[in-house]
Image (cartoon, rainbow, N blue to C red; front, side, top):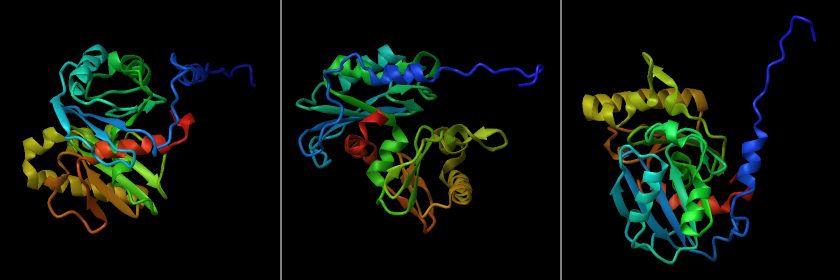
Length: 269
């Protein structure tokens, strides 16, 4: 190394990973067979919180419960809302959560629609395990929705249209590393969230908003060269004239996809 060179201090990435591996509840079994247990699936959105019970095969066995997402929504407020959300849902063995932000091993890295500052480095999986007494897995909400939409063949991409925009990518049914494209600039400094989110839909109207979504699809197609793009989320049905390589999915996929979290390697959580 030259005398004039500067050695950059690298962040210690091992510590948070070790913390995530060594939960406060080591007796809680995180890897359990999908043939044995009922799953409480929770879909966290910027507008609504949703929950349902899933059978061992992933079918909804209760009516979907929906409440409004409180704002502001720091972790303590969120956890109290979860108590209210699942009050009538009983007899579940494990919990799957789709969260609108970047999630690493159950810990929240970003939460743009709930307020990142109070959420950053908050171990949501651990907090819910302590509160509910059940094993918990937390993943980005677009990734969870993708599991409920994909066919498991080729390169499939998911675009969720709701309060904001979310993306997920799958190859032969396997989840690829998560990219927060929603916060990448797409047009005149606007992010995907701002360009095709719910606020843009209400401000521009369905026709102009759909043109924006079509432009976004073209960008994603050229960027990823997917075989099929699935569009989910509460605003998916409002897209006018989706292209032939686009499939509109059911919004309930954000809940039903939760069953697949328990098929993944335990080390991912």
